[in-house]
Length: 426
Image (cartoon, rainbow, N blue to C red; front, side, top):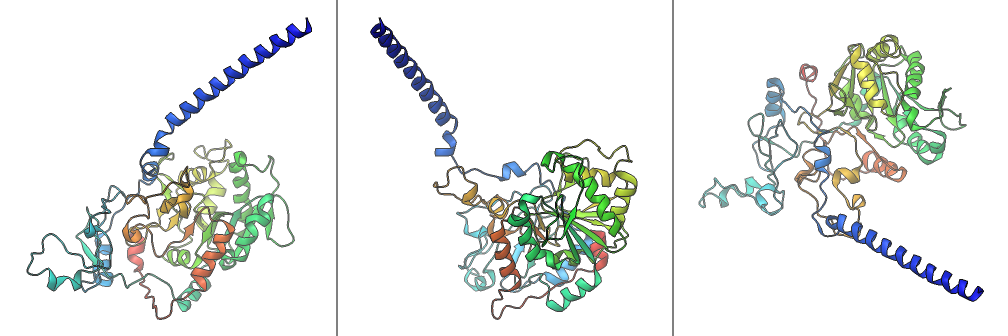
């Protein structure tokens, strides 16, 4: 009897095992079928994901156009022809077309006949053309880099007082925050880390939160943070909010802020034109509040204005922009004079479409020419960038070295100051 029961149990187990193998095989087949494109399809294009987010208004006024032509434009050799579209950042590049790439070989255009091609080759080196311009095509001298010398940056530090408040939590004190404390945060007039526990090394503003310090209660945390920094409203001109994985080039930020007044109610950052009515600033890339903007948000908006959200969730940057606009705080974009981004909201890997964001890292990656910053000459990457997001501690120190210690011998950077009337107009 026991032997018969044993045989029956073995048969039942065999059938059950066979059924499990069948289900597992069917599931594996479906996964392979659904991910066919990952294995054999085209390279994933992150531009499609960002198209709806980067709906920026790219325009040039008459004064700015005149300034570019007069001060930056140069029709001599080694020039770059740049013209930009008002409707899209998706430019038409062709990897196989040498006319649209920067190469060491001479580049010519179709309107040159065979007789004068050779005579103009030397003056046509290093040419890149971007179509659909809101203004007439202008030749830009690539030798002019918009960099700041030491004397100029020293004047900015003395002129502008900025408080940097950096969002973090206790688990990140010695994973992320300590490295920011040792690098770019030292260039703030004052910097404070916002969390719930004190630390003997880091300057922590200890907050008493009614909820656990987790992402889902981020807006509640920031309402308390704003009330905390409000006590410093008369000691500083501007207030910079960042996360503990952001890198800031302070000199470039101060150079922008000098064109404004802290008594104007405004915010600066990278604006996404979705979710909120007039868009919102990316919290990860960082955003700046003027003194007057901070006053209005704390005194008139938070927990007081009917258009300022009180419900709690993680989208702190959206809530901040909405509450500011409710009391007349203006959102100013921070593109440089050539319309390029300065607050970079995504990681360098993502922006350059590097291999670390591939599902299968062993598969060769082809840079998409229409992906942000993968275009020839990185035409959307400003040489006066202000912030970088999703920066790991090792990259923090790399940026610190490359930006403030490494200097190529013989390279001279000429700084071009934009007139104040044009800055205010933009």
